[in-house]
Amino acid sequence: MILTFRYRIKDATTAKRLRAHARAVNCVWNYCGEIQEAARRQEKRWPSAFDLIKLTTGCSALLGLHSDTVQAVCKQFAANRNAARRRPHWRGKKSLGWIPFAPARAVKLDGDAVIYLKRRYRLWRSRPVDGKIKTGCFAQDARGRWYLSLQAEIAESQTCGAGEIGVDLGLSTLATLSDGRKIENPRHFKKYQAVLAKAQRACNKKRVRAIHAKIANARRHYLHVQSTKLVRENRLIVVGNVVANSLRYRSLRKSAIDASWSEFRSQLRYKASRHGARYIEADETGSSASCSACGARSGPEGQKGLRVRAWVCDCCGTRHDRDINAAVNLLLGAERRPPAVEIPTFRAGRR
Image 1: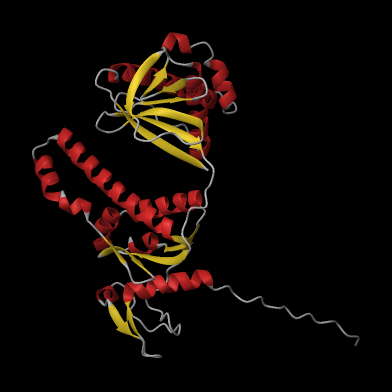
Image 2: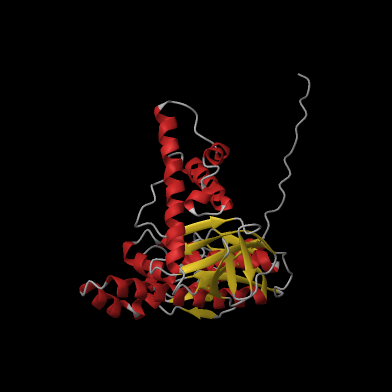
């Protein structure tokens, strides 16, 4: 599988050179856009990635870029255009810096630094790169900080646990597990909401970007801790598709975005694939209203039913916690397999 390693660059003195390289990358990108527009006006076929690379051959020395970077820009332009079926947007001064490369020739890791075009860029190398590096890029975030991203191919390892768990995502708690445990929802945005509002009223854009980045980093770190714990304990993880169902209600959207269910499921998915666990996204329609003991659908439903957190089944009399019951139903739904239905065959007789 492909895993991305991201390192922060110590850009106190090197950010100026990276910004210059990023401007050169924008020139190549916009040139590809001009070629695309010219081909459209002349009603010719769209230029392929090979055509764009051929047209930009020899410009790397003039722009101060590595030849692999120019080729990577052309390939990415063609890929984005083919996916969207239209010309990608122009890259200008407000675009975040981006410098792609093929690590086999363009960059070299040397201790706590990376060498690109014979220049050293020091970085905080928090962990070693496992596996074989395939591609990478320098990328700039909204605060102007630069990062080195390396995509490496690593081998899967069977290091997951032996348990099986159903995960019901929610708002009051981030997730409820089928064994009765609950993962608390720290509500990161709510913690910094007052400070963020004060910075926005003062029109302090730099402070606003810093607060947003702090919220995102805290949320991502918390999700990494919880997802890693689940994968290490279980070989089967079943999660409901709660995003599609809950975002219909306007009153829940802000809390749902703060909980970041999509990021949590994405982390569970790739970590399960890496450590040999099985990840399933199940349809959770009716999971909280159906009794996990007898299967009768007698629980509260709809937006008004969300306030009911515990209920008793009318058929078997079992008392349920709404979230735990939904998590158990998700797990049972993944474990059950529909029986094979034999289709009878009829032989036509003579009349």
